[in-house]
Structures are given as structure tokens and as C-alpha cells.
Length: 199
Ligand SMILES: Nc1ncnc2c1ncn2[C@@H]1O[C@H](COP(=O)(O)OP(=O)(O)O)[C@@H](O)[C@H]1O
Ligand SMILES: [Mg+2]
View 1 (cartoon, helix red, strand yellow):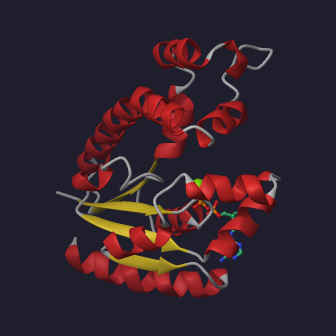
View 2 (cartoon, rainbow, N blue to C red; view 1 turned 135 degrees about the vertical axis):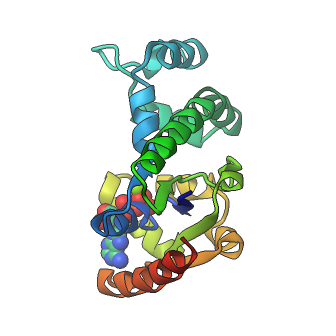
View 3 (cartoon, rainbow, N blue to C red; view 1 turned 60 degrees about the vertical axis):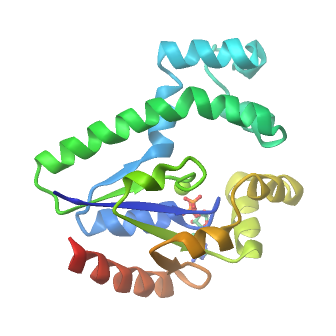
């Protein structure tokens, strides 16, 4: 049995950055953001989203416009829950089948990158949890420069999630990404050693 590690953090706190560090060690990483993106192209999910949010979430070529959808759900908690109810069960299904796949390949450790690990109660299925931490002002700065959005919208996106300080308390391990990438790598290596001793 592989050790299943749930990797989370806040928006733009550095989950993908740390995911890549795990992948570079040859550890499989299941990226739930990517899965959710793929699922939105599947007919069943696509239809439910259009039914719930209307044609205005579609691009001219009839694909789901994730930016438009994001704007809707980040200002309305009800809408956010509706979208989660459509997408989360399918994401879970895919994660479990990917875990089976990597276990069949005899991997000792499998990482699942889940932005809403605690919010969606996904942590119940993980052996250990890791939170990638950054200070709020770093999160805002990184969000603004990565997505080209303004500070207010960045703050709104951060507010829609469980506070990062709370996630930090709940995590088994914390990787500090509030300084340089070099420092993050050191923090990552320390946590990796501990995880390897458990797997
Ligand atoms: N330690 C760091 N210093 C400066 N920029 C960083 C650092 N870590 C990540 N970034 C940048 O911040 C942005 C968000 O990081 P990312 O790993 O994509 O976060 P997440 O996956 O949690 O949303 C990216 O553009 C990334 O290149
Ligand atoms: Mg990411």
C-alpha cells in the first residue's frame, strides 16, 4: 500500500511549485485542478454547468469560460457550492482510479494536489496532509502577477477559502514557501524525508 499524501495550501501559495518538486523526485502527483478542467469538457458535467449557470458562461466557441465561471462563484457562496456539488464527486472518482493505477505500478508514495483538501473533506482519504504556506501579502502579489487581476479580486479569491493559518494548524506537515524557492526546496526536502520514513 502506498502512502497517500494530500498536498494543499491557499490560492497561489505554491502548491504547483511544490508538486513539481515531488514529481522531480519520481513521485506521482495527481493534479485535481487539471482533472476538474478536463471534466468540464465532458458532456454530463458541461450540460449541468450550463443548466445551472446559463449560456453566459460559454465562450463564442461553446466552451466553458473558466474565468467567467470563477467570477460568478467567487462572489456568491451559493453558486460556489452548486459548482462544487457538480464537480467534486467526479473529481474524487478520478482521483481514486488514478491512485489505483499508481498503486498497481508499486509506487510507495502518491501525492494528490487538492486546493480544497479540507474544505471538501478530502483529507479523510489521505494518510498524511501537507500544507504549502505563504504570507497573505505574497499570495496577493503572486496572484496579481500570475493572473493579471486586481488586488481586490485577488483578496476576494483568497477570502473564499478556509484561512491558510487554519489549514496550517490542521496539516501534518507544513512546507514554508514564504521566502525564496531555494528555501522552499530545503523545507520540501525535510518534509519529504519524514514522509519517506512513513512509507
Ligand atoms: N517562493 C516563491 N517566490 C516567488 N514566486 C513564487 C514562489 N513560489 C511560487 N511563486 C510563483 O507564484 C505563483 C503561484 O505559485 P503556484 O505554485 O502556481 O501556486 P498554487 O499552485 O498554490 O496556486 C506562480 O506564478 C509561481 O511561479
Ligand atoms: Mg496550482
